[in-house]
Amino acid sequence: MAIIGCGGSGKTTVGRRLADAIGTQITHLDAEFYDDEWNKLPADKFAARQEELVSADTWVIDGNYASTLPIRLRRATHVVFLDLPARTCLWGIAQRRMRYRGGQHTNGVYDRITWSFITYIWGYRREMAPRVR
Image (cartoon, rainbow, N blue to C red; front, side):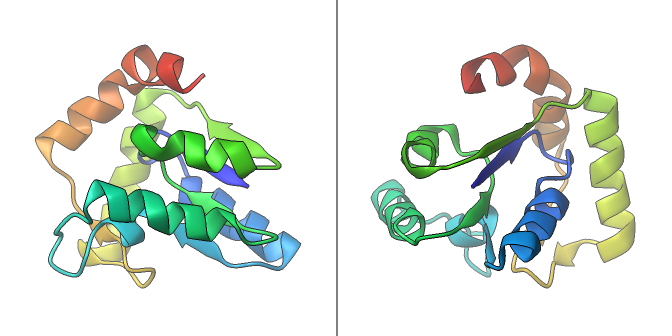
């Protein structure tokens, strides 16, 4: 099962609940893509890692990464696309910041709010959502 959508839309929360419901683990693509020092995994290794993940009988993966989305879509039995307004997603990242106080979350994902991330969220429905669809 692939969970996709704008940052702050609730992908992790929805993914965690769905993974619990079907009895599997959730994989957060940010935790696969970035290491402890926020270094990126090379594109070929990131794609290979996703090929491994989707070869399992059941899986839930949350994250976008448009360049590797076809890997997940080819094997997904279900796709959840969280297409929420930008203000809702911005509120979601603000709540996450208040909850975790920045830094690394327990699931390995870093809480990084940058101006480029905010502008990405603001333009997601206009620029990215049509590409995802």
